[in-house]
Amino acid sequence: MTDQRGCRLRGTESFEAVASGLFAPLRVTGPQSQQFEAVVDHTVMGPVVIARIQAGAATVTRDKRSITSSDVEWMHFNLHHHGPVTAAQDDRTTTVSPGDLFVCDNTRPYRLIGADSSDMTVLCVPRASLGRYADSISRRTASAIPTQGAIGRLLGHAMAAVDEDLPRQGVPCMHLADALTALLLAAFTDTTPERACVASDLADRIRAYALAHLGDLHLTAEQVARQHYISVRHLHALFRGSELTFAAWVRHERLLRIRRDLLDPACSDVSTATIAARWGMHDPKHLGRALKREFGETVSDLRRGQRD
Image (cartoon, rainbow, N blue to C red):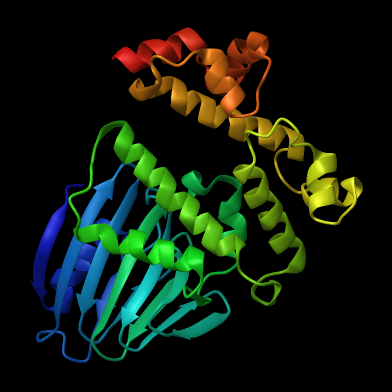
């Protein structure tokens, strides 16, 4: 998929073809399909795609007939700028206002209804990139999340950068994709309990706290439970339905970041021990075996990747 700037489209069929190529197979219908017009800008940054879409009145439908096993499993994060838009997925229907953020999961049917001209930025993130957050975010589809707060404003500015000359390849591109994904996770874990089930919201807040403190030697189940005014038993219960225990999840997240830094040419003159300590692993003796078990690569393999 290549970048496109200022792609002007006439007719719902033309827009349907472009939107289906960007997101997944969709159907687009409108009251005046031949007079329909849209402008689409999109940018590919590593695993994510950002699109700015200005379009006339139309209904975009992702139905059961459109979904196939070969489709990329995307989560579509939509930042609404202008115009009357209604989002519907699962048993939720929401009329979004300018400045609202909402998500659609393309593994299930959804519908976007634009009663008049609208303008929005869509950030497509593979479900795999969201890791264990994907399921909790998927339970909040078609629910408007205001972006007036600090995190929301940061995310809004970042998503609006679709028109900027951003790096598209290499390590800087991957860092940008990571940063956008992290901002999304922060925006969704910052929502109130009224917008999600209390247990899910608490687990998400704990994950967000842990991710912000991965470099802390004292990041333990006891310390995190104390920070969130719950018992250690309650903390473990929150993670009982997850693939990993809390401690194993923290270890996995630390190894992910160590691996990323070992691959980064900018860290070529930083010792492995320093990188490991930066992410809270202060005993590098077992690091090689841990990386081998987790990713099938040793420290030497990753260091060679810096030079390739």
